[in-house]
Image 1 (cartoon, rainbow over the protein chains, first blue to last red):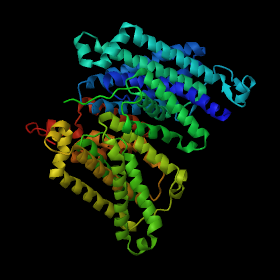
Image 2: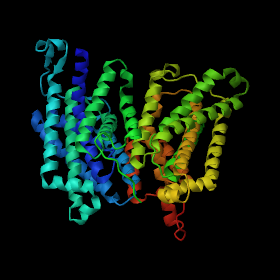
Image 3: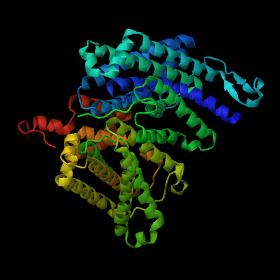
Image 4: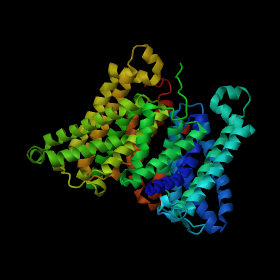
Length: 299
Length: 294
């Protein structure tokens, strides 16, 4: 029992980070129908910018977190401007290929700048663990680290913020309109370039925050961490129903908890296969995901 | 001399790989980026075949044994292509892309956990069948692959595959079994990727799951993007460039270390400026009068 709860705790911490990345995928896909393969690298860069701000500039953690988000966001806006926008009318495969190209370029740039070795991430908070067993005797042996709580709370706050932006503001309404019907929104005067740039900005900010949180959680950042995390976050987005914002969060938690259970109950070498197995299973039987709706292809 | 021979063999293997991915992505208009998975299946099955199943036969008849194991590897990859293709090809466009990535990674993780082929320690001791004649066989298999694909695309089957790329709904209403031809193209692509993998196993005599990462699939994609999707000559040219560029950059350590960066930039710039790759350039400048055809 307490073992199981421990795996749930670990899964929730990891899942918050997946969710932050998955949100960017799902928003961009909802509007542009583009799998932004470079999104995982944005998340990785967020981790490195975090290290730079924390150790080189010596900023406090909260200031660094608040700065990482716009920096990484602007970065994504630039990428959109030069690698995706010129291809907006092109066949859908074209931006997919540039996205893979951008992802290689970012990965290699970071590897050249920072080296291929993992970099230690400065710990902003002292390492405190809470033993749940002291309060609830049934859960004896379950340990929650303070970092796990921090990761979860920060992620939830950011998601609530995102929800407010998307549901309550004018630009949020424009984003929803674009994902509902791209052409009709353009005809109704929605400034599509600005809204798309803003979508990339928001999505990348969340991923950048995720990069910082993962650095804090695992104490290190490395250039290759974006590839697998990106694919898994995309899996989470597909699982929840791509284009559906709450779906991405639900998908992320389902994915991370199943991973944590697989690792916990012994098959840790198959940890990375789980995500892909889920992905293919969902794509085969319910490609529109848990919360999405099926769409018919029209001529 | 042997350095050039090594590079030349690698080049041939990449030419087969690029041509095989071109069948799927170029001719049939699907978007697969899990090609490393089929490459891996071909390599491991062929390696296991020549190491475990027929060592005596291989000693007596190395040439026949090589043909046999290469075909076994290719067939295994083709079957893997069928297994992956049947569920995945119900998906379109980018969903298919991500599903193929998933399958490629699953195949790699399974190999990483399979003890009988060495798991994470790698698979050593694959015999170099036919010894010094091996490069000759590599060339022969390359010609065989290119010729087969070429003839296939000139047949009515090939035209059906092209019609699926051009307009799926129109093709269906003309009585083309879209799903059959998609699966067929996918299996053919997987088959030749496996053939290349089988040769690779005997060429390097050592396999490791890290030979078959997502990056390998991306490199093959890069080859056909650079050369021009949907053109066999383009695939060959792309394979030549992508294989030889890192070798040409060897003179300078700086350039060598940023070769992946260069590849990434090439990939972006080609799509932005010349989506048909080298073949597009060729048709634009060398033959301005004639229309670009498939």
